[in-house]
Length: 146
Image (cartoon, rainbow, N blue to C red; front, side):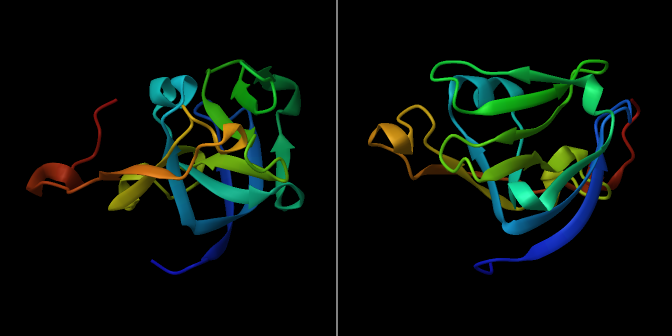
């Protein structure tokens, strides 16, 4: 995987109410094992704050914070989909939900690093604690029914 792979992308939540444009780094794909990330299961790509713009539906975004309150997680209040979050580990970046990016899927990545959010880098821990792998089966090309 290259060190960086920047792409200009567009995206939206499930209902389309919240839209965005961003410059993301495809080489930064990762998951986190903190309590929130374990539950939402999203793969995120990095984008600098200046390289992410909400193009529609800013009023639909709902902010969620927990624990230290440093990370700011944004969800569409209509469909409930997490679109992006401002990182605690790097407050100058957003993590952008890959599943919300047009033409992209978390399953486009064969291997995803899992970052230590339980023992966060700002608390003396951090780093990669594992890898998630996706190996498609023969039926993986089928269109989803819902």
